Image (cartoon, rainbow, N blue to C red):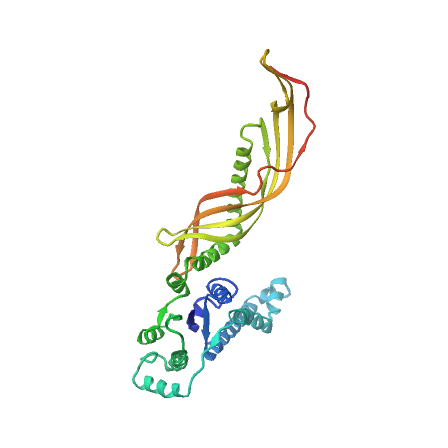
Length: 361
């Protein structure tokens, strides 16, 4: 089993965003049983206090805005600022973290009585996490890391990791031969399997598609592929095709391939389509062919109206970049690699023919 201890600084680097992003991925991996998350009472306290501190800062900003916008007194924008509810924001600010803990079920590290003596010795000898830094922060760090050193794992079966951007934590990990990473992305990229890493690329694509402009671009390209699909379906048997089909919905986004060196990825998406088009053609299959005259008789001009819905799958390739914060940013669409509907024949209504008994000469 893989055990990870995430420093408060790493939670802060993720902006305490427990609803999506890398912390949501950690939650999912813990829920699936691929990871065991470690924590400490100090980390729990720091996360909660930092979230509430942000709410307090937000309240201060709102108060400043109220003062600046009093020129709009009794107007809607000013009334919205007046209605700011600090208690509501505090409860909802903590809700994501509480849900994260409920789902990931972290193991709380405990300190033993002998940890205090060991911590004092490290302080005197300036051993990690002590150094020339701020003692206010070094003592809580030492308490957490001493509890970690007492946590027992089975060496042949288990692995222990630290995720922290704090150099003192990194030094501590090195001293005690614990593998440390400066970000969740680095941990995922170096430790987790490809299937598990797909989660971070899936998350990036989902965020990208949430933006209306990008969603519209994807739907436009898929609609073009749908039109080509219908044309190819009736390539040999139509004279006139009036197509107004479209994409109703795209869902179940999942990354299925990524290439870190080339900064490429491919994702699969389910599509729900509205099939709506009019097909007009001369029905030679049901006409009479006179071999002697070499002509078709009673050729009917058929008009079929297709109006149905179906679903299918598409695979889309993208280019991406890795930002300074180790988050993945989609650049542009490279290609739609696969477009396949679940049905080839759609239900149709046979319209009244424009004319009958047509002699085709």
